[in-house]
Length: 214
Image (tube, rainbow, N blue to C red; front, side, top):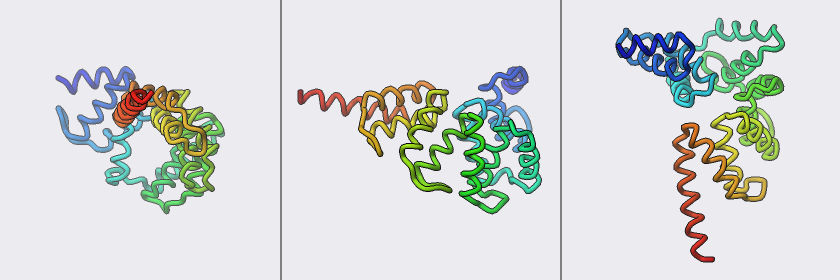
């Protein structure tokens, strides 16, 4: 019955239900195991910002439960024929960054992330910021990373909110601002990021300790 009602809700486009239905298909709860359907549901929910779906999708890629075939790559290349298809550019960026089913290439990944980010796709803006922060396919540029994280964070990207908070906390390439760090950790935590909840609590405790000396 749980599977039945999740499916009814997922069919109506409810994102959390799509994620839960993906879990059921992955584990065979109330239905037979179907990794392809699980992967597809995780992908849809992840693109809509469901953080649990993003984690599950990442696990699929890491465990190679879903092979990214050359046909898959060709599919996304065809999608780029529509110059407004920011999702296609982003998907190609992920394929080349992860290098599953195709030769891994950070430079090509960066190129496609940049193409998608130029079209204001929020997940690509975060990934491009990550490339600049870590030097993936380009030279390290903390200022650009910070600016991209800020743009994506303001649009609600949870990973960007956490990364932006970390920049403010560490003062990495900029002046520390613990109040701003707390603000963005809180944003990410309220959106379901457990790591940000832990970072927020640690930072708040540090501020309490500092306050006792003044």
